[in-house]
Amino acid sequence: MIWLIARDRKANTFAEGLEVKVKPLASGDKLISERDVRQALLSAFGSDLENSDLASLEVERMERVLEMDPFVKNADAYIDQNNHLHVNIEQREPLLRVLDIRGGNYYLDATGKKMPPSKNFAARVMVATGNVSPYTPEFLEKKKSNLKDLFQLTQTLLADVFLADFVQQIHVNNAGEFILVPLVGDQKIILGSTRKLDDKLQRLKIFYQQGMPYEGWRKYETINLKYSGQVVCKR
Image 1 (spheres, one colour):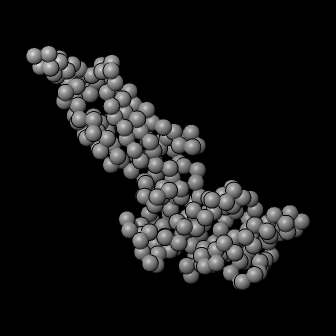
Image 2: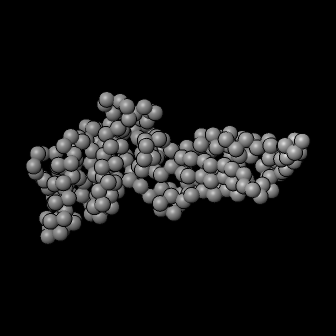
Image 3: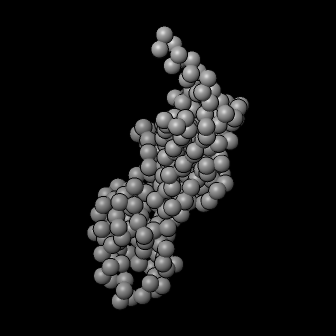
């Protein structure tokens, strides 16, 4: 009898409020807002969740619905002891913005997932342009894909403290070569393919850290790393 009374009481209890929190990115920005989350819940469930019967709230389904959003990495929904519904959102972290050969305009996150541009703000990340292959969900599994090479190149650049702040753009020319565009200076750094990438980037770092300060940042038009053991500069 006591269990029946408790069950009936819960069935007749209504949510006292809805609290939505979106965890900011490392930059402090938000690709998706709390208002966006509320609207997504309203569209999916078609009712005012703040006044819904607790017994009818499907928190696990709410999480699944929200995690279908391309900006959402993880959604956590729960009801506290005061009958408040809480929804916490962890966003996907943009790694690279891609403007591909077919007019595609999107972000890739740290796992290679595709994300559309956000209406809330433009993420400050490296930009890839030029002859970039169109996105497919399985691009990282392909044996040969310049989008895969581009993604792995970006990961390598961002893992290096100097290069992460140094490179602002990666361009793929019609020959399929990767060209790095630095944040400072007007040089184009011709990387070529991603073969022997570590060696090429090490030569680049040595050149900029030891040779370039004496020559001046604007002296050269191109810096070519394609040739083994060399840094070939052109004015």
